[in-house]
Image 1 (cartoon, helix red, strand yellow):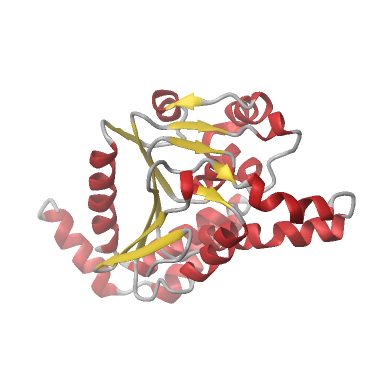
Image 2: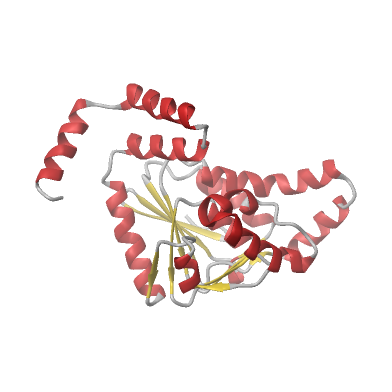
Length: 251
């Protein structure tokens, strides 16, 4: 399934969403198609998000300027302009399946806010990450300031957000923004496929429940009970038996 800014493909139970707009920029069409693509995931159990020529150069300022300019000074109108962007990324973060970001080349602004909404982040050696909104005279408002502290901590979130300066793949790995760095984009995409196939083989309700507990980030005791209640509703003895047999056989 191909949109104007995105391509959605399937390989078994793994879906891959590729940003195909020029330099992965995100304009009004992108936000609408991002929401629509999520509605067409069907039986997919894992989603990979990646770019084409690079991951993403961020917001398409030229395509977005007119609508944003009309809303300046009016909170209600401005919120309405940003709402489709929030629906796209909040929807991605709330998917019941694991979402893997495979980043090559530049990952800028809204691109970094997108990957912060994913569950697992991999990159290639050529990846560069930045949150340059302060250089444009704005505060990042698509979820990055809210999610990044839980991923890289307050210190590195403030370093990225207050300076707007980029970091490379090695730094991204050292601060926990990504968990793996591959030599080339080709190796990155292969690794993302392998990881996605592994995740697709795990019990989907266990993955969904784990995501829900992590995303909710409730106080400790409430979080414990959230996990317990999920298991009470979705755990099966058969799945426990299969998991025990696989572990004993080294799988």
